[in-house]
Length: 146
Image: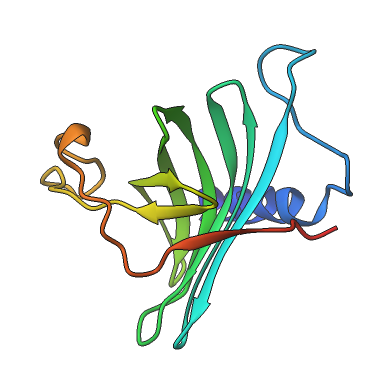
């Protein structure tokens, strides 16, 4: 319960606490931070992602609202490697906190989600090099909310 409350409070600060131009920077103090937003919204399905990139390091927030499934929202943290965004997604769904690995390939101004075999506990990809980027719900780059 304590973990859920801390997660919820942290999420609230991340999503509402920053105004345009405010950045939380981890790592080098003078590093350039790139803020990008992506979204898919069609046929009752939506995925939104806000990321901030410093070098190869990425952090941000993501929400999945898929038709006939429970909404989940949470934090993402990971790295860019050769146009592949590999993230750990920590999220709340039905009051339960979970973490799983997600991957997206950057193609033009879109991010295409990748799929592959997962470990037995379903939290990590067994072999990242074997991922197939075949999602039919590409996230398109959009202007970030102000």
